[in-house]
Length: 83
Length: 167
Image 1 (spheres, each protein chain N blue to C red):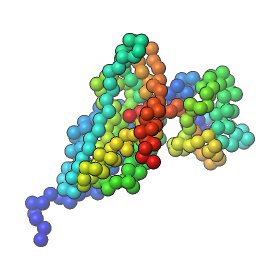
Image 2: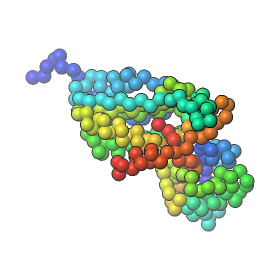
Image 3: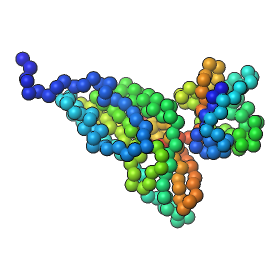
Image 4: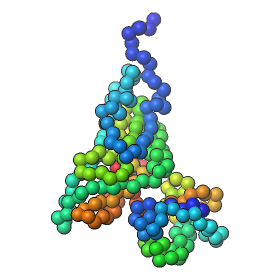
């Protein structure tokens, strides 16, 4: 699955994107964030406060309970500050 | 019988709606003019520009620059969805959003919203709606450069409240 990171999540993970196989038991966006946090110290730092992490599935905003099945691209980022 | 001196009919509406994300500055007057050129059905055009503002933090450090990061693809799609939502709510004849990315210094334009409608009420309301929702849902992030150190701007609860009032 293609995973994108933006802003301070990108800086903490140390990657703008990565393509990694996700185990089948990782069903939701929230599951994925928790699973990513177990991968290494950089991911753990990025996802240390899930309350301030937002997500998009295939370029649409979603909540943590959104199912990953069928999605091509998931993105994690902080609350937006454009405009 | 039609008047041979009458301006040409309005162009297809689709041409008057759209979004752009770009590093380059924008010309607010030219964008507004393009939306109304050659048509006579527009009675109101609202142009809003958001600028990078000089700012001094509590510790006395001045803002040197803002760097805007965005999610290419989603930024355009999300702003396009906001325009579609605005069209459902108001009788718009045009709506355009131009948002810049990259490094911007105080005084630089960041974002432009142009709306056109037969009457001013819809044009004003739609422009405000687009700006309020853009700030909380378009995937852009600002990083401040102050005296060589950089910090990401935190989202404001007042921005969330501004967007929520349209629900």
